[in-house]
Amino acid sequence: MPKYPTNWIDYSLPSGQTFAVAVCGYAGKVRHMYIGHDPVRRAFIHEIYVDDESCQTASHCLALDCPHNRSEEEHLLHMLDMNEDEPLDAEAAEQWGTTSTLASFLKLTRRINQILPDELKKRQEPVGEEEPGSGE
Image (cartoon, rainbow, N blue to C red; front, side, top):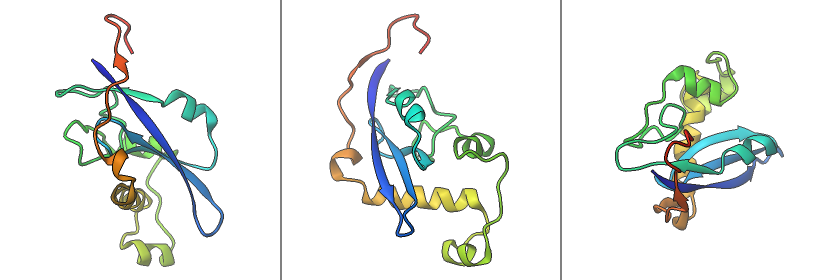
C-alpha cells in the first residue's frame, strides 16, 4: 500500500492559543488537529498508508468528505481529546451556529481546508510502500 506524507501546519489564534493540523498527503485535507504543543503526537503522525480503496486511518480522520472516511463520533471525540461532546458557551455557539463543540471543530477543519496552501490541497507523491506483513 502506498505511503503518503502527513504535512503539519502550526496556527495561532489572536488570543495566543496555538494549534496544529495534520494534512493528509493523499486527500489534501486536514486529517488531525491538536491544541497546544504535542511533539509526541506529531512524531507518531508523519505518514499515512492509502490506496484507491482503503486508508489506514479511515476510522480516525477529520476529513469527513474524503471517500475513505469511516470516522464515527466516538472516534472524532477521542481524536480531539474529549470523552463526550460538550456544549459551547452562548457566545461561541452563536458564532459557530451550533451548540456542539465537536460540530464547531469540524466546521473549523473545513474552513482550514479552504485556506490550505494550494500545494497541500493536491495529492502528494507517495514516499514509499508498506512492507508486506509489517502490519503498519
